[in-house]
Image (tube, rainbow, N blue to C red; front, side):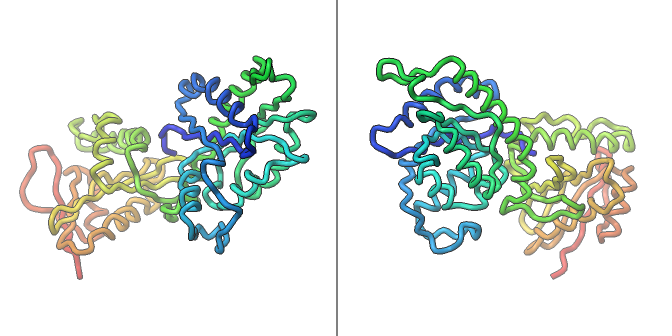
Length: 354
């Protein structure tokens, strides 16, 4: 599970000229700004009217992800980049506005496994019937509606034609954001597993995806777990993976092609590759200690070797006393290169067959 900052889209749903929605959305983002900073999230205010979505005009079903029009592709990018949503909605005739229903209907997978909070406003019901209507729709899209809501009765929130909600509304909004952040973190493994770049892994429920700088914290922890045993076996602490800070890891994650094996938000294993002329360098092949002996390392090695197309050989390094590693590499066709290294490691090579 990545530790990147969450991105929360605050979407004002009414497009009626002179509507109260922009005032409600502005109040919400203003009062939540300090809380968002404490929770390490980015609030992104937006109005549905700014997206300029016509009435649904895509020929393909939203589940396909095939979008013909630029307005749909832009909307898809906005929603896909968000980790959660707060819908600021009025109630029109016992339901949500058609603009919100239309915006929801445009997309499919982009919504999945993200929390949805509601800030409603209206007269008699304070917009709560619109929220109940919307919840029926968002659950079909695999959005996860929160239990916390903010319901504002317009007559209670207006002061001399100025929108000024009561303190209890602000407290409710802060509680909603706190719950949304907790649920967004909890759902992160579900979102990642169904990401377009995620592929099935070798263990039940596992998946692999490219690692990036946002994964530095998890990679740092896995390195410490994996290479501590290497340090004991080789009787040395002079192993870079044991000393790298998250910033150091973040730097090399930006330079290497690194792949991580995940399950339920836990980083189980990883490997990185980099091409240098006709050579493919493989490094940082690591598997969580409790999962060794299940073929995960061999599987990750094969995945890394698949990047060797066009190369003449594959190179990797391990400790001279790392007999388990050496046995694995020899079984996979690697040979130790002659010549001793000063750091107690050995280099191995494997020719690439065409």
